Amino acid sequence: PVASDPPAEGAAGEAPEAAAAAAPEASEVPEAAPSVPSVPSVPAVTETSASASAPEAPEASTSTDAQSHPVSGEASIDLVILPEGYGQTKQVNIDRLVGQIRADLEHELSIPDKSLFLMNLSGAAEFKQVLPDEKSLRDLGLKPGDRAGIELRINYYQEQAAEEYVMPDCLELKVVNDRGEERIISVHVQRPVMEKPYFGGYRNKMTGSTFHHAVTQTAPIQKKDVHIIRFHREAQTYEYRTRSTQCKREAGTQMEKVGLYVDQRDDVVMKPRRPYFSSADKAALVLEKCVMIQCHARGMLARRRTRQLRQARQEREELEQREAERLQLEADLRHKREVERRMHPLTPEDFNVLYKELEAWRVNEAARIQNSGFDEATRRAAQYELLRKETKLLQTIDKLKIKAHSQNRDSKIKGKLESMAQPKVWLQTDGETTTVHTPFTTRAKELMDLYSGLRLPLLTVDERLDVLLHVKWTVKEFDCNLTREMVDLIDREADMLNRGRPEKSFAGLRKRLANLFLQFIETPEFNPEAIQFQKVPREFYDQTGTHPLSTVPIKGLGC
Image 1 (cartoon, rainbow, N blue to C red):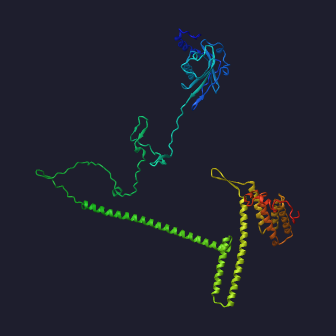
Image 2 (cartoon, helix red, strand yellow):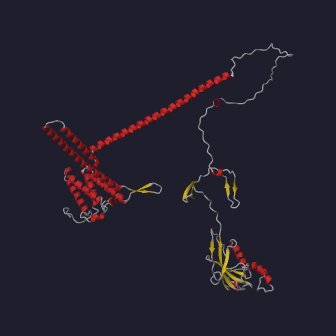
């Protein structure tokens, strides 16, 4: 049975019973609107506000029979959960309390109690706040057959498992001393290596905190290891065993006395084969053996100590010998270096040493001639000879300086070209390195090989012509005054080779060709890898008349 009309005042006491009876049946009325799906679980506080009026709800248009023929005492309520957009239309008895309706919806949505709020009643009646639980829909202004919308807000907190606390290895504590200064003290935490035993404690009844005795907070006492060697004679010599024996025949002794006669005719007097070994003899024997053992033990310790001393002396002698050999080797290398820097000087320091030694020799010889007591003619002749030797030595030093300059220049150029031709080395994240050959480094390597071929001596005519041909085709890729001059010099040398000219006539030509090709290699437009070795910015080349890329004809090249 369903209540059709509002109860009269005389039957006011029967209204709650009728509403309670009508509630379960009202939920059984078939509804065209889709059922509200279960709300997904949320890990934290979830707030979902629902705001909908009856005409805008999509579910309101789909309800059919239940809305067209409302039951007496019921109202059509559009329940919408926003912003998800889930909604449902229900026929609710207007005499039911809001708290009962909320409890039914919480049970249907499978959410905790008192986590659903009904608010913002709109439609036939208006109520802009949270609907109070103690009032019914009739108290809020709804009548049987009315249509209204209610917003639903879900707000509950789902507890999550607390993360396990892990104490750090070091704690930084702020402590204020007597003078009011704040200091930070680092306390290092010692991890327990074993489960600490419980020696008692107490618990605070108000807070529930448990406190253990201080002995459980301290590290266990480490026993000291005793490394003293102990010797015990009996423990090393004897093995003790306990055995029980029982004779096959019992025997006894009986002495003669008054009234007793013992027959002694078959008695035999036994004498010991060895004299009796008394306790004093045993003590003397023990002392003798102890002294013998002590002698052997002391001898063993002395021999061990002797071996240790002998080994230490041998190691010390070997160390001294290695140190002496190292010092002798360093002295020999130093002497060899001094001789080498005088025979083949390369650095300015080497030539300064030669000049200083020459000056010291000249001063010594001049003093010797001055103090020799020679006559004027002999002294003049000695001074002339000294001056001649000094001049000759200075000329020798100048020749060595020119030779060193040439060697230093060649080594510097070689190192520079090798640096250009070196592949790129990339460091990976795992610490390994990767070698990469780029097109620029490959180009620099080819140019370095051609330059080395131009500087090679003692080549045959065919080999020299092959090198010149490779250089010519390399530089003819670019058209400028530098490449034109190099092509002209290559053609001139090839013509002289074909005419069989001697090697001496090629010295200046080949040197000039090598220098021009080196300038070609050091130009970034021809060798991109050379840009990293430029000491003068490229814009300064544009301000001079000797730019390597200039195409202005040079007089004498036939351009």
